[in-house]
Length: 102
Image 1 (cartoon, rainbow, N blue to C red):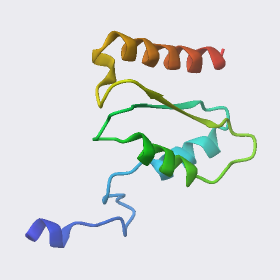
Image 2 (cartoon, rainbow, N blue to C red):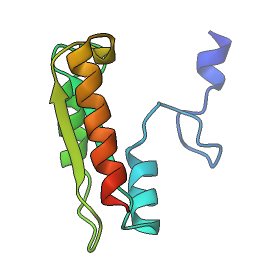
Image 3 (cartoon, rainbow, N blue to C red):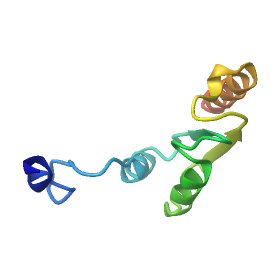
C-alpha cells in the first residue's frame, strides 16, 4: 500500500508512471523525420492486441516530412516468431525497414 501511495504516476520529470511509448516515439520522429517505424502484431495476440496498436498509432499527430508508421498483422499470437510463417513475416518487415534506410 505504501508503494502505490508514493508512486509518481507521471506528474514529475522522473518520467515514472504508466508504461507507454507513444510520447517517446513521437519525440524521436520529430527529431529524426527519416526514422522508420514498423509495428508487427500477431493476429491472435491477447497481450498486445493489434487493435490497441492501431488505435494508439491513429492518435499520433502527423508530422510534416516524417515517414509514416507501418503497422503489420501476421498469423500467430504474442510470440508469432515461434512459427516459421510468423518468423518469415517478421524478418521481411525488418528487412524492408532496413532496406528503406539504405
